Image 1 (cartoon, rainbow, N blue to C red):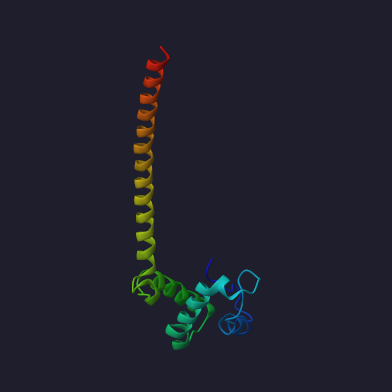
Image 2: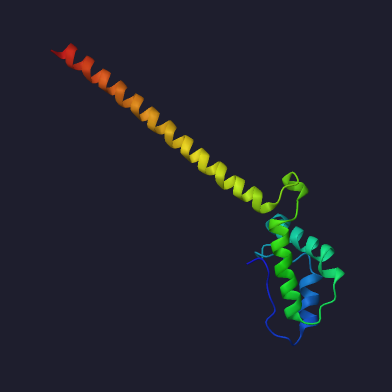
Length: 132
C-alpha cells in the first residue's frame, strides 16, 4: 500500500527519521523521479500539513494520524492539480465517464453491426437476383 508502517516500538526514531527525511527514495528501485512523484507529493503534503505540526507519543499514534490524513487527503482535501476537486470525486467521475464511454461504444458497434448486416442482406439479395 501507500504507507509503510513500522510494527516494532524499538528503533522508532531511526526508522521514522529515515521515512520522513528521505524524499528521494524510489519505490520501484529504479530511481526515476517520475516513478513515485505522486507518493512524494503526498508525503510532502502529509509532513507539512500534519506530521510536522504534531508531537506523537507513540508509533501507534503516528500511524492513526497518518491513516486519518490519508482519508482526509483522498476524500476531503481539494487539490489544485485536479481543478480544486477531491481525488475520490475525480476517481468516481472517471469511473462514470468510462462506463458512459463503454455504453456509447457498445451502442455504436450494435448500430454499425445492424447496418453491416442490412448491407450484406441487400448485397445477398442483389447477388441472388443477378445470378438467376
